Image 1 (cartoon, rainbow, N blue to C red):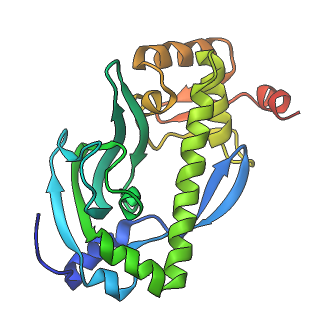
Image 2: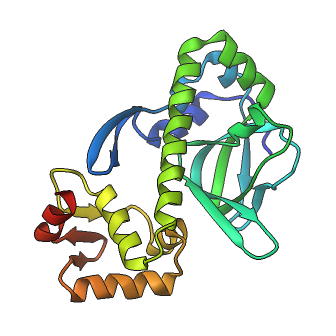
Image 3: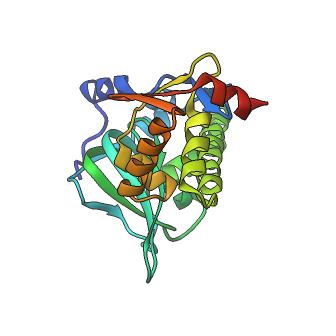
Length: 238
């Protein structure tokens, strides 16, 4: 961990974060989300930031480990997982700009494991600092709750999708939810491997299902884009 306080040149590294206002596509409805960014953190938090760099495959914190910090991902990608005796459960991918380990505010132990899928750099903030800021700065508290609500909705949607037994229907429901109302085409922002993990499918099953949908004329694939057949979308939305 790099123990220096935040410097101006470090602040500039947050400039690529997601826009504070962005569109969440859910069930082909556009929802405006006011997203918490580093720039919106109170000075009381920014003054206590340190940094940590971890390599691909390295664990940031483990399930049941004592909670200490809240993190903001600057660069890279994290995956939240839970380890059982039988398998690994994938919960959610943390993208640059998102916070992680919010459970530290309310619990003594982390409920899952965070592992880096790519070399990652994180801003690290003591949980007591964040906890006090939530009391002292209502606007910050509101933004933080907004972000957590969005996270909850996203995870809930993924869990609902995973409950669909048919891989074909599961994938179609996922694609439909991701496509903007005025469009039939989805530009893939993540790898097929990541999408498979989110949907609880193997990479091979996802690939076979995509090929089957394309063969049946339900979708058209071109590199990083998937276009849904207009007739199918019309039937789906009736």
